[in-house]
Length: 268
Image (cartoon, rainbow, N blue to C red; front, side):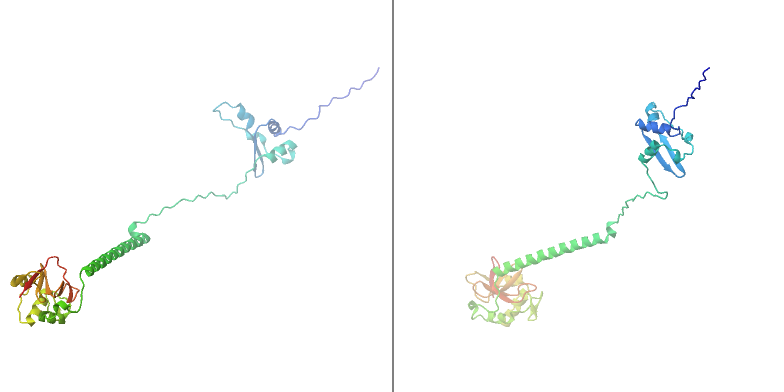
């Protein structure tokens, strides 16, 4: 009898099966794997296969309790590769999110010093512009008056021989004073009545009364020493186209051209 020794059969060597075996296989099939690092171990969760098989609107939960506590030394090379390739986000325990909130502060116009200063500056500029315009207008008026009225301090040649003009010329430069009738100050009719009184002629006090009390003569017949009148004003004719009078407040007694457009000549 031939004795036969039967060779024992041995099961082919296989890779050890661990809780990460399915994870490795899933990763080789291109399914997504997420790995989160946690203190004290590795927590592994697979999404790909379950999510692919879930019906629309169905919530799929993965039971992580089967993984237990994992030993990093038991991981296969493939599992190590998956873990190494998985995205890891590290957030500090004391991390805080800060957001800035815009603060809008409203100040009433009455309390806004800068705005009030701007208003005051604008008002001052307007006042200055108005004053400049008034000064320019006054200067233009003065220029226009000077163009039509030439003042002189000496009696014109046409007044030679007139005693009244000779007396009147003594008071050139006397200031105009409303109601004045003396060398300290004259108004128009106060000046004429004072001068005429020096030659013995008494005139009424007002300009209209003086015009009404004498004899009207034509411009061609008028001579130096006659009165020259326009409503509201009266002076003494100095011959030619000139007169001597107390013009207005701020002015003085002077010889100047006759400014009335249609004067009346009065003789006493």
